[in-house]
Length: 103
Image (cartoon, rainbow, N blue to C red; front, side, top):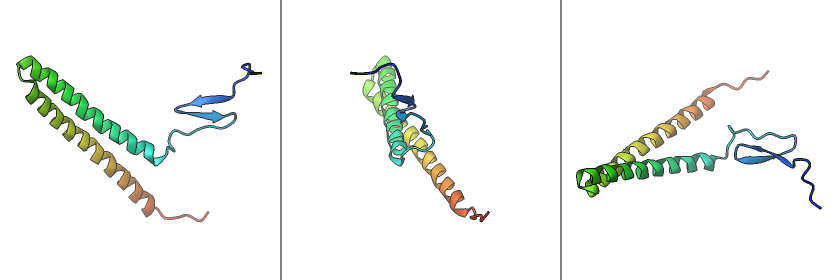
């Protein structure tokens, strides 16, 4: 028989924690950050492409608008990708340069 009177887990963020445990959202698997960057790049290209298609259709040439929008999306998406990659590299360099303390 199923017992629905007491909760089995606590929903935290994107995961389910067992009773008495907590999931930290700062310690995500590495692939989640990389997947997020890919989705962000794709969304920028698609979003700017659709906006360019709409603006180009308004002015009578949707192909040129789509092309310009897609190029702007690629430039913006790659800018964000490179900026976040440089942030990760600088954070790793700071972690490696800190001395280990023996307390």
